[in-house]
Image (cartoon, rainbow over all chains, first blue to last red; front, side):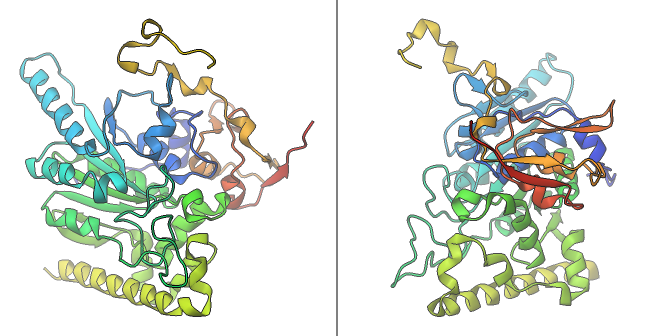
Length: 323
Length: 94
C-alpha cells in the first residue's frame, strides 16, 4: 500500500459532480444518502458499484429512474460481496484477453442487514478469496427499509419493531456485533471505521481502501432519523456525538495494525473530552424508555460496555505503537 | 401510472433508464432553508452534508445555490452551519 496522503478540500469535493444524483427518494435527513454521495466523491477513476438490497438501493433505483451516474448493479440481499467478486473476476478475464487496459475500481455497498446478518457469508468468502474491491457498510443500525426491525448491528437497549421496549423487555437485549474486529481477523490489508461528520477522514479512508490491491472494508455510521426516531436535522450531529462519546470510535487497521484516527486520537490524548453516552442517547426516540427510572441499569450497561471497548481499543493501538 | 405496461414497453431486464434528476422531490418539504448572504462565509459544509445534493457550488461564480426542486427540508444545513447563516422557514400553503 502506498503511503501517499490525499488532500481532499471542501472546494474540490463541492466542485466534483455528484455520482449519486439528486432526486433519490430517501427520507428527509437521511445520512446514508450523504454517505453514499461522499463516498462517490472520493473515487479516482472508472468505478463499478454493486449494492445489496437495502434502503439506499430502494430509494436510488425506483423504475424507471436511477440515481447513479456510474455502472451500478443490484442483486439480492446476500450478494453484495459475491457480486463484487464476480465483477472482479470478469475484469481480470477481460484484462487477460487484452480487451481492457485501464484499472476499474469496484465498490460494494450494503447496509447493516446486508453485512452483519444476511450478507455475511458472501462477504467473508469474497474477502477470503482476496478479490480486489472496497466494501462499504453504511450502518443505520437496523432494517429501516422494511419497517425498523432489529439487526445484528442494532445496539443494546434500542427499541425496534421486533425488539419493542415495554414493561418486561427494555428494547434489544444483545450487544452490537463487533463486525470491524471480525473483518480485521480475516487478515485483510485495510479495515476502517468512519463517520460522515468527519467527512475528510471518511473520504481519505475511501481512497485508501480503493488503493489497496485486494479487499478493503469500511464501516460508516449513518444515522437514520426515521428508525432512530430523532429529528431529521440532528442526524449529522449524532454522527459527531457517537465519536465524541466513544460509542463509535474512529480507527483504521492497516495489515492488522490498529491506529486511532485524528478525532478519536484527540479524545485519547485528552480523556476529559470524552462525553458520557447519555448525551448521545438522549434525544433519540429509540432510547426514550431508558431515561425512565427502570432504564437506569441498561444506561449503566451501555456506558460500561462503551468504556470497556474503548479501553480495549486503546490497548490495541498502544501495543501496535510499541512493536 | 394508471395502466399496466406490456412487456414490450419495459426496458430489457427492467434496466432503469432515466436519471432521478427528472424526479423532483422538492414538494416534500415543510420547512425551506433560507440563507443570509451576509453571514455566509462559503465554507461549503452545507454542500457536503446535504443528503439530496440540493445545495450546489458554482465554482465559476464562487457561489452556493440552493436547488429547491430537490430540497426535502430536513434542516441539516441549518443545524450544521457554523455561522448560523441558514434558517428554516415554514412554507406557506397557497
